[in-house]
Image (cartoon, rainbow, N blue to C red; front, side):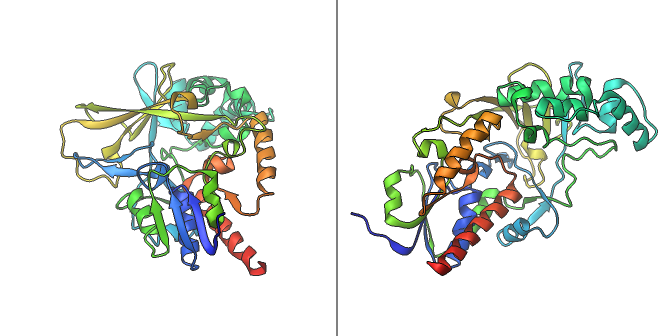
Length: 379
């Protein structure tokens, strides 16, 4: 028979979600125990500097962008300094040229062999090629309504099918809504007020978040349900369907296989190049082009290629929840079931079945921690 202390909290997962909650609760005098199945903290934002002074993001490039003075940014700024970084991506075309992404005036000129005098002329052309009367119900229809079929066939449909493993017609409109379209010449991937990287990396930032006398960290420690019995409350960054023994069915995810290649070539035209072809790869990243890498000192640059795959091909690595009408309905059943559990809260992308950018993720989990603290006033 286990007994628990009222101020003892279990957090499963040492990524941004768990670390945010851990810090807030620790500062409110709770004793927090974090368990992490991997051999490192920081979850999918884990990074490190290799022998060539390249800062590598082990699980693909993570770019922080938000409005100035957002709640999430103000919270993270307690634990890191920032270096400015405005991310740029180009797409590799069949003829070997690259062109800017997101689609903008220059992209449209490259593809259609035209030249526009101004943004108004670009918008008029785009309006003529897209199906502006279509009210989109899925990601594929969103592509058609925002950029038209030709641009969708080049940049979005093949990439999306590789990325998600299903036809864009089956994907929730929220997936395609992440892709902006511009009629100006802004080649930045994001247009937020604040765009930066942690000066000493994400891992160091998370390390600082977890540096508190009330936080204990246990790496290489998989979660077991009986662990909950020792704690007043548990915050679980675990697959919610697996926790409930798949009683409503499995929730679909995509994973990524990363291939590091060491190339002695000139720099890529942008830190990230997207592939528009039918190869299995979606993109490649040159790490020394990110602003918080140090002065490159090797002969061979690390270029990481990403190949989306099923969870079966990369067990346990849940990167992207696949949002379809059916998967949303299944998640709703698990979510309703979880709300009947008083001593646990699901967090993170696998607990919430949602892909969340970093700043929104921090803000969501600040609110989860605040809601928990508020609930105790009447306990």
